[in-house]
Image (cartoon, rainbow, N blue to C red; front, side, top):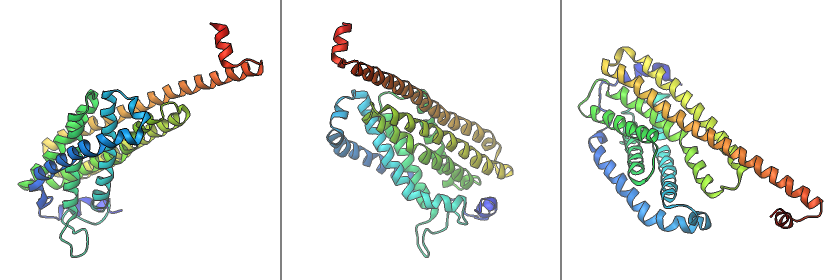
Length: 300
């Protein structure tokens, strides 16, 4: 990995602009939201009830919106990883800079792909904030912070701010871990809605998700703060103050998510134990020559 020469690589890029596409970030975001609207209205809303059938019909209207949003989140994260995964790792850990072409003699640069990826992430969070009926204060603040920080990092690059490249790449670190770490929780929630009686399965799924999000947050903090400290003397005072505050806020939101899955894990464990106890009682009754129905009738 070439992360140790991060400052030399990106500091030597005298072009402070991230990508020519930064000028069209608003257009990319508008197109993203338009596609999400079409996806919601003409694909997910008609077909999710057919795919999940009995599970979908049992959900409340509020839960149905959250359920649909989780599918949007999974699909968007897959697209973002496919588009921005290689440019991110090549730029942060490899030997590339933002103006490096994706392919030899190609015109599309690393920065181009990362700009589009950032707008896809922003569009996904805007869609969630607007579409979901109920959203926690922590999640709302996390999404709003992500949207504003991402758009500010793009905006300051348009007029060539000296910290634009560093700030944008640091935002990409936050965004990359957000996409990777939050991928599993979305799948876990979808599974929770479709297998609510599989307590043993859900217990281990939530346990793994809790560990996954916790470790992801720690790794994100290590890499982000390492880069931040590596560039300490390059930052303006405003960035020196704002960046740690924002990072603490993002980390707190992710740890809050880990805590939610911890509580869900405990709840599923309790249900699993109750289910096992009920099965044991039924087994003892059957040994005594009683059916469950007869035993219940006798108690009544």
